[in-house]
Image (tube, rainbow, N blue to C red; front, top):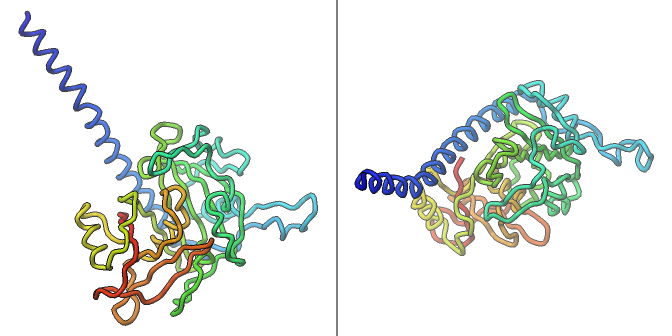
Length: 308
C-alpha cells in the first residue's frame, strides 16, 4: 500500500509539473491553426471586393456641424461591403461592441501590459495615423463570423491604391482597414499574439491583406540586412523579416505590440538595385524610404521578426 501511495504521489507531482505546459502547447497550436484559417478566409473575401474605400459617410460630410452629423463609415463597410463576400452572423455599432462577443474586461498587449478596453476609434488605436491629412479618423464597428471569431474594424474610407511610388512617401493613406480579432471571445488569455491578433488590408484596389505575428518583443537593434535575416531564421524556421505591408501593419498596431516609434526598420521587400524598402517612424509619421542596402552591408537599421 505504501508503495502504491508513493507511486500515486510521484505521478501527481509529475502531472502537476507537465500539465500546464501541455495545455499551453495545445492552446498555442489551436490558436495558430484558427488564426491561419481566419487569415485565409479574409484574404479570399477582400480579393472579391472591387474596392475598399468609399463606404459610409464621415461626420464632417454628413451635414457638417449639424445635429444629424454621423460617422457611419466602418459600420457601412461591414454591412454593405464585407458581409457580401464573407459569412457574418452579427454586426455591432461602436456603442454596442460587447454584443458581438468582444470582451468587456480589456486585453493584454504582447508584453502583458493591460489595455482597459478596445480602442473606440482609429485615432485611439494609433493617433500617428492622423499626421497625414488624407487619413480620416472613424469610429469602430464590430462583427462575429460564422466560425465564432469576434472582430473590431478600424476603417479609412479615403484610402488610396498602390501607385508603386519610387520615392519616399507617407504610408497612412495606403491603410484601408485594420481588424483586431479575438479568436475565443471572453475566454482567456485575451492577449495579443495568442488568442488576439491583427489583420491589415492595404490599397483600395488590388488589395493586400497581412496578419503578422511578431516574435521578438524587442527590436534587433542596428543590424545589417543579412544579420536581420539570419537572426530571424535562428529563432524559428517560420520567422523572417516582415515584407513592407507587414511592416506597415506593425506600425499601425505598434501600441499592441509594444513597439516604440522613432526607428528605421528593415523590410524584406526588394526594390531596384539590390536594395530593399525600409520604414521610418518618427514625430507622428510613417514614411516609406526606398533603397536601403540589401544583400551587401551598407546600412544598419532595426528589425522585427514575424510569421504569417
